[in-house]
Each structure stands twice: as structure tokens, then as C-alpha cells.
Amino acid sequence: MTISLHGNSELAPPGEGHTSPAIYRKILRFRNILWARIRLDAASVPALVRLVLTDSNECLSPAEWDDLIEQASPGTALRLEGPDVLGFQATEGILMAADRRGLEVALICDGPRLEDAAPMLYGLGLSTLVLRLYGTEPAHNAALGASDAFERTALGALSLKGISCGAPLPRIVAAIMITPLNQHTIVESVECAFAMGADQVTVMHSLAETRKNLRIDAMSVAAQVRNIQSRWRTGLVDFSPRLTLRQIEAFYSNGSLTIGPNSCLTPWRSVTVDSSGAVSLCCDGPVGNMRRESLASAFNSPAARSLRSTLRRGFRLECHGCSGRFGGSFLI
Image 1 (cartoon, rainbow, N blue to C red):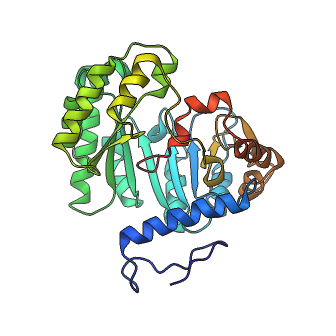
Image 2 (tube, one colour):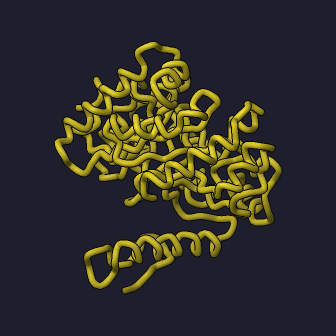
Image 3 (cartoon, one colour):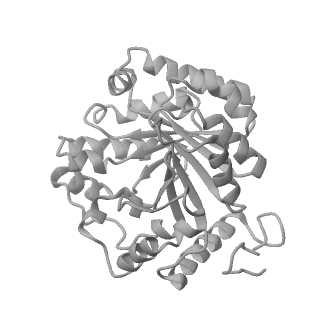
């Protein structure tokens, strides 16, 4: 068994040789972290490409989207998101291009358009559907501003589940963000997600809500997390970030941002491209543009290398309020 730190891994996949799936994942994770540390302020190609799809007058053309997908290296994970990703004009073409390349694709959506899009998503080999669920029916409807949003989301998820007929893909992950609207019904929200056919649920602690100084009952959230942990096993229901009960109480009580890892690998392993072609590594701002350079060039531009060099020396103030440093329990 060999491991290459240069480009593609030569590690035998699970089922070949003597590598178990758990050991395989751990070694790959260690390799990625080690490679990032070795390269320091540089990186090779991103392991994750996020496409933030929003309608604008400066959107990339279909040919430019195809070119972007062609530049992704084999094994790259693709993530599609946006306020109306299923209604975005280029979504189907992007999925077709990714399917031709055999890329692993996750799509993040709120659900109302899902029923109509379910056959297309299944037919084009979507790997993971991340369904943003804002709580039980009243909370979800209020968040999306539509009285039938929850019903349409449920019908869409069940439609996709029915079309797949027991196939392992696409996997449906329900992402429940804790907000003032659902803070007292988190357990019920998890139950709703499984009733819709979710294979996995991730409860997401709301860094954004804390920054807005919106009131979250820390004791209530901690009690519900304890309840969830006693009812469902880890892996079936997960939390992002994974905080202890004491950290949850401190975080939601006073907005403490001292918790979590003291380093961030996001700028070394992922890149975000918006509809205009702007390339960024985090909320710091663009480091390049797909209309002027290749994905690899933007990922290793002087601005990108400067950001990585800065992060090697430590966090900036705004980094403590960013969820990117916590990684994620699924592709997002």
C-alpha cells in the first residue's frame, strides 16, 4: 500500500488489498492535511468546487460553465447552491457536464421546486441532495414566505426517494439551521426530516444568527441536543460544528467565538465560483476570475497565496465567526 503526496492518491481503495473503509478515510484525511501543510501558502487543485448560482446580467455562458467543469480534476467534489438553484438557467447543463466527467455532485436547495426537478436530478446521477429545512411546517413556511413551502418540500423529497426505488444515490441530507423560529422545536424538525425520507440529518449551530444578536435560548438548545443524542446515533443525526453541551450554552448565551479549531484548511482544499466567474477561497473576497484565467491559476493566484500565508500566521478577527474553519459533516 502506497500513498502519494503528489496529485492523485495511490492508496488502494476499500475492498482492494487490506485497506478497510474507516482506515482509508482516515489516511486520506491525514494525507490531505499533511499535503496542505507541506505546500504552506500554495495548493495544487481544489478538492471541492462550490458553484454559487444566482441570476445576473454577468452570468457565465453555457460554454464557460462546461469549460469550468472540464478543468476540475478527477475526484473533485462539486457543490451547487444558490437562492434558487433548481430554477437557475444553467443548472441542468452543469449537472450534465459533471455527469459526463463522473464527478461527485451535491446540490443544496430549499425544496419547493424539488418535485418537478426530481426526475432530472436522479437521471443525471446526483450524489447528494442537501435539503435546507428551516424547522417544522410553520417555521419552514415563515422562512420561505410561502404557506405551502413545507408541503412542496416534503412532496419533492418523497418524489426523489420514490424515483430512486431503494438505490443508494442520491443520498438525501436534511440540514436544519437553528434559528429563533425553530429553536424550541429542533427535535420535531428532525422527526419531520426523517418523515420526508432523509437518509441523514445535520443540525447546524447558527453562527450567523449569533452575530446578528438574535435571541437563542441556550439552555433549550442544549436540552434538545441532549435529547437528540439519546434518540439517534451519531452518523444518522450529526451536528455542525460538533460542540459540547457546555460550549453550546456558552456560545448561545454570550456569543463566545473562542471555541473550535485554531486553524483553517478551507483555502487549501476548496474554492467558490459565483455566476459571474469570480473565484474566492473564503469570505475575504475574489482571488481571480474564470473569464481571465484557469481554475488552477485562480486557485494559486498571488491573492490566494497571500491569504494562505496570512492564515498560516493565525486567525484574523473575522475568522472566529466563520463556520468554514469547522469543516462540515457532509459536502457543505
